[in-house]
Length: 299
Image 1 (tube, rainbow, N blue to C red):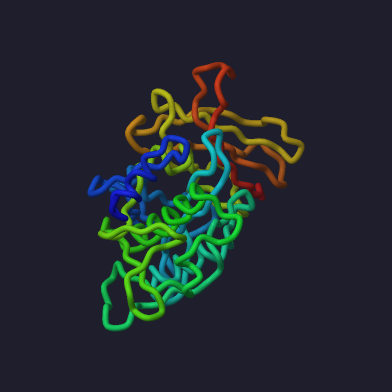
Image 2 (spheres, helix red, strand yellow):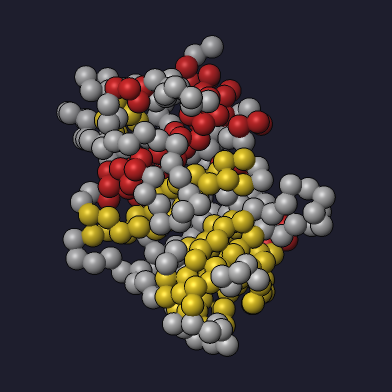
């Protein structure tokens, strides 16, 4: 079996919940902008309206999507944060993904820490030198399924920052195209099926730590039963003080954008948690909903 066939076979293993997508419309993210815009992986570019955080980057900084790992009923999946970074956006996004420095404390990274570089004499936008040659081998304690998801963390972040679906190529310190964590791909690494790789609900706004007042617009992406995306506001004790549901633009085949106006004008000042989830038509008989949550402050 060739190395390319091997990675496709590995990605097809149901237990890993990852499937190679080839040239399917997956893997690109547009930067936050006013309103909501579809893009290749079915996620959206939502502005964190009312969150107290501007979607416009400051001078010398770029807003990029960065993918981290979180736990879901289907196992570890990728969650996205839009982050402002300095320097070349794609490299800064990959470095941030590797650092694990997520705003949301529920997120983590499967990647070793390191800094990515442009390969010598290559210079292609979709080519990266690994931080060090230890990345070519699977670290001790990393399972094969974690290695596959770690590679997808790199691919989704790089393609999102580039806003392009190009295969991602990695090089070692000697300038040779190389495997990553013991997994090789002859034609570059592509984004796996978003339904089997991404968390099925992801909040874009409010961001963790945002300050809001009055009514704010919550937004995110989901693939939820009949496009229904329930949400709740919980107080510091965990009690539900507001709830509702948003209707996403679609479901089943990829993640689609959703928005909801959340009225917190009757809530006292303090810290709260906004929770979005997938609908659970099994009434608790299944594994339960996928959940994303963000803490915020009402002023």
